[in-house]
Amino acid sequence: MGLINIQLTIKNPKDERRSIKKEFLVDSGANYTVLPERDWKKLKLKPEWKQKFSLADGRVVIRKIGNALVEFKNRKSATPVVLGKKGDYYLAGAITLEALGLSFDPFQRKIYQSKLMLANLTSTN
Image 1 (cartoon, helix red, strand yellow):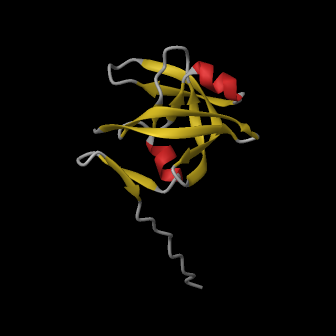
Image 2: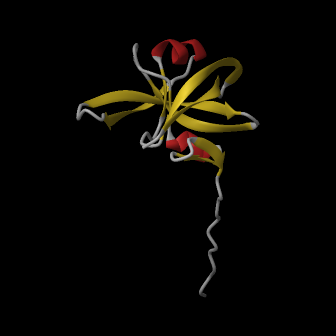
């Protein structure tokens, strides 16, 4: 696991005028991006479902999941985000990076453009 910080802009997908720009910790072991409560409420993001998460110390927490637009440099994509509680930290997860076509190198602590592949499906009929 490696850690770095990146600056992301998060927007409400239904009203892109509602946005925040913050530093997020990139954690190669985290799946989802986390927004603290004050920010997702400011953006007026809506919960879509709840998800259980296991924390590094063994605790299990439940958080609501919503949808947001995320921008990093010249890339923008929709992604699910954890609608955090008060005290939760800004965290950029792997699903958000993948949605942006990016990867994280924990040894060099750098974000880079992913080499992406499409499946080659051929008919056997």
